[in-house]
Length: 366
Image (cartoon, rainbow, N blue to C red; front, side, top):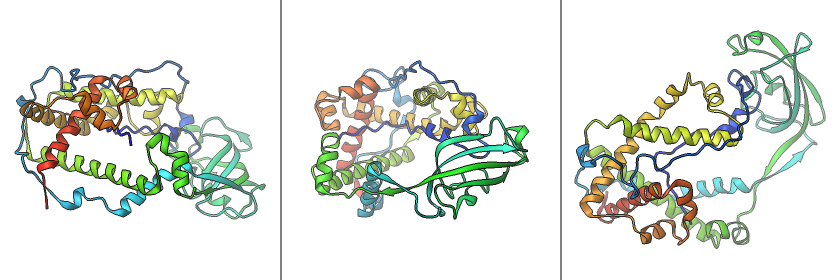
């Protein structure tokens, strides 16, 4: 199965949450203009072509601990069957279908498809998501204003319900704060999720070409291998970062990692018609600087991983070869990764993976 671990790029790409009607922080209160330009992301920023950190001598900033036979806890590198099943279930959610149910009452936890129009003193208002059509609302999610969802329980599809609510006193649209409102809401249907049955036939028809799975057993085996690799990677880097001695990390190295995250976030948002300002508004960040600050700690750890890896690579004479990349991607064709992420970043990821594998060969599992 193809894999690609973008270390330090745990992006909060939840742009989908920008849509929909709810309480104080919602997309309609942001002024979004759909963007058509493509925002490029330089994933190789701050890296040499071979993947190592550019313009820095790693050994100046870290004294790497003895990694010849590190000790790791068995629980940190062991994958339980329940973890595999959890991943399989999560994976299969992508193949769920839905039925439109119209012959029963709405209950807590249901997903209902609705139209709604809101009024204050009999007049439709602007802002605050005053209306919507074909909106899928999960009852009990507290997505909408308090009390809205509860008032749909017990009604059937086809009914139109007058939902009475009161906007919070601290509602961000000042002219609506503390006001009573009525939402005329039509329930179209209840969406019931239908799970696909996981069989060898399903795997061959739907997953073999994309993931290389040949059967249910093979699928679970490969997923377990990936989970194990991920656990080993986390355990090794956690150990090395804890035991090694670091000097103060140059701010520019951290800033490069933050820039990549912000640019990738902007690119994702732009592709969906949103801006970074929309994101900041919806998720409560005062400004871009506040968002950047929230990423600094994780990006500093990423830089520390790179520094440790660069020192070890130099000590052991390790460098990324074509064979190493083929082994990492389990394929001779990885051009799509290099064209998207850059040769430098792919080499970075593969180099770090090579070091983890080397250390695990002599690691002691307690």
